[in-house]
Structure formats: C-alpha cells, structure tokens
Picture 1 (cartoon, helix red, strand yellow):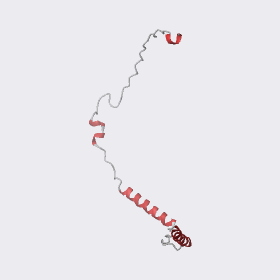
Picture 2 (tube, rainbow, N blue to C red):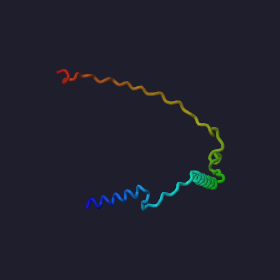
Picture 3 (tube, rainbow, N blue to C red):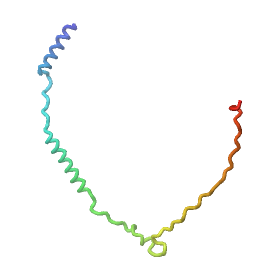
Picture 4 (tube, helix red, strand yellow):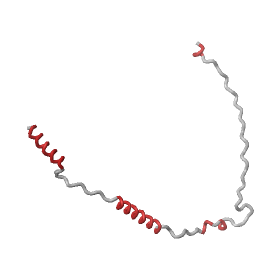
Length: 105
C-alpha cells in the first residue's frame, strides 16, 4: 500500500513542478504608483477633514477678567514674598558605645 501512496505523491509532485497544479495563477502585482496615489489621496482627505473640523475662534469667558474680582486696592497684582525661615539647629548627644561581648570572646 505504501508503493501506491508514493506513486500518487510522485505524480502530484511532478505536476506541481511542471506548473500544472490545481491552484490559480498568482495575481499580477499592482503598480507602486497606484499605492502612492492611494496614500496621497487618503492624506489629502484626512487633511481636508482636519481643517474643516477646526473651531472658528474661541470666545473669551467673562470670568477671565480680573476686574470682576478685584479692581482697586494697593495689593492688586503684587504678591509679597517672605524670606524663608532660618533652619533650627538641634544638637543630639551620641549614644555610648558598648563593646560587643560576642566579638570579644
């Protein structure tokens, strides 16, 4: 039975090597120029859509003006900075050192 299987396999292999396979011929490759045109068309369409979706002009909110909150006084617009406080020095007495009994033995 293995001889019959090998004969069939050899026939199919010979047919594939000669190009008489049952598969369809490969499709011809498309032009790179066509790919470039498609990419440029998609880019132009995206750019046009982006430009069309931009808002015209943003309106200033009425609360953005400071005169609503404070329009008179001597401290308007000036922030007073204070010097940083002096660091506090704390002295700590060192702990007495006791010899280690395990290391001395």
